[in-house]
Length: 474
Ligand code: ARG
Image (cartoon, rainbow, N blue to C red):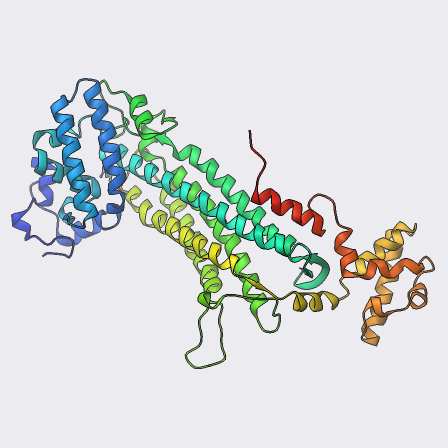
């Protein structure tokens, strides 16, 4: 039976058994063929597979296993294959199972014996591990760049709103006033840690498995360091059994990706809340929202909602990978072929999400009056009043109690602490002085928190600048 990826009639092309040679007496069924093949998804590794093969071939030539002519033929063939792939003319065949065998077979078709010699001293086991690492390294570099852009977008908005006051929440109850810039920079911190984690993960991704061959290494006089240098790896994997079976680096990447999405999801939740007409702190640009097919008035924050939802699938990929690895004996097992789809989807989801958020963050429309009005409700400066009393020598617990009584009376009279006169406030504690209203204002409250990590506008400006132009690391 022909499949979409297998347009040629079967008898005209290599039967699967042929890929493994004379050892097999019957071909696999079509179902088994489809079940075991990975070409439909691993063909996206093609560019890296070719890169790895060229480095391997160049090394084989340098140690005298391949001739100059072989190497030239392989280079010529691979160049042709790359352009076929780029042009969408390459014929991917399910019968050839995966990206590696498809490319090798085509190379042999194009250049003959040199193509057949390429696989000397390697196995698909070390080949696939190399391909994934090369691909993942490039993905990490893209994500690091995107995280930097997102942090800068947040810091730019934070700088603009260093003095915009909003209520800070705990338990989603109004707690203390904060600046909107400070709130945004909390996310810049999270995405900064994400970047650190990915950069750290990259160190373990960037090791060369090639040379491990199937599992035990190879008897050819290979030069692994040379291949590592050619491919830009920091070094070689130092145990052949581990080299072909290790997928820790992929798990680490998925864990780092899951945390990126967790942070995105928290931010999304806030954007959704802030955009609710009940809150009305912000508006998102129309291009990130959709309407309703039935309710004409609706503008729904679809992008943050979907990002919050996609966090689930990324978390799922992490658990899937951990589970994939937990019962595997050394060394390579076919189970490992299952590493790819979740890994690819993690990278795709995180990358697309970050790209959208960079654009969306830059276009957030802030409504400072709504934020201010909300901060004025809920006695957000009650702690400031308690701290004021402490500074006048009152023990903190007594101050806390006095303010609690004042708040209770305000609730009954439906007014704010700042609405009480000095005399009324003094009734709750004799230490209240004429200067008391200074600490009951929102501006006074945020300005007083000017230590490192505090919400004061001057601090927020400083921290935003740090994100926008970080001090040199070395
Ligand atoms: N497609 C395989 C994978 O993704 C390549 C390695 C196959 N090795 C093997 N011994 N069957 O893992």
